[in-house]
Picture 1 (cartoon, rainbow, N blue to C red):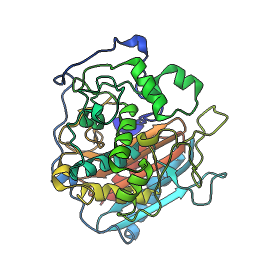
Picture 2 (cartoon, helix red, strand yellow):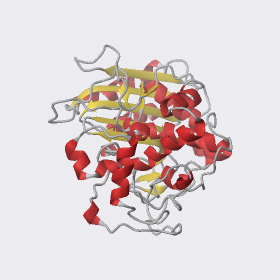
Picture 3 (cartoon, rainbow, N blue to C red):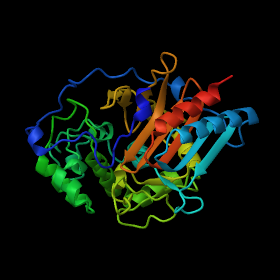
Length: 383
């Protein structure tokens, strides 16, 4: 399946581009979309996942899940540590993790760009409260953004802003040093816009950096505090933390990229990937998001109203939420959720509307979380 090998490199490497690859553009207006055709909208029925996540799954399903997990682990020698959870609303939850020898006894895991869902949910919640409009230009809140007078908050959410992603800068990647928000904005401004807003889709961590700063300006408190107060605490996500750039990152499964001599610092991506959590907590969040317990029903319905095709075939992006076509399964089957990854870590969180099951997988080392997720959902669906 196409999604099986999906690792977005979302917090480090997206599809690489350099300043010489394009001529920066100045735009006085939003451009009509000229990219590959968008996916059909997800429907309200696709989002329905009613039912408690309390309890445990029946022994037969647990046996199939354990067998699928064991097979996946045996086929993935590069995995150092892994956590998985599967949940059937109204049926229960199954979870297991295998920490590495040098990890804490029950480590939390960094979910990389799957954390963008939390940033998007917070922005949309503030918009629901009338604090600003998704059609507001970014320049209303932040100066120095290329084409900031016409790039809107919504363009940042769905990655159609045209903004260069600062983590793709070759010097930034070579130096591998912490960058402040101001540093990253300067890098993006130096490169300039890659296209006019709305014209195409291209992943930009810088766009989510800007969303994090807008959250701070509108909500009047630091990003991590805002997301914790608005999302984590109300949903009772007791094993979830929002990292602060340069702050502590204790009790985590260690992230050591292949060939690296020092662990990767998961605090650096900021609002582009700041969530540390258990796998059941990630499922609880996604169920609450899809179930309109975080946003107004009409806002929830808009999350995948216009899913733009991404850089990996079969993947599409809405407002902080991804849709995946699953060609290895029956026709018209897809997942809803988000992926994340960087060298040394990868994650997948998804809801399968047809199978009525959630899955969350995060691992360190080298492995394909979507392949684990697909095998586990198949195990749930087996007769």
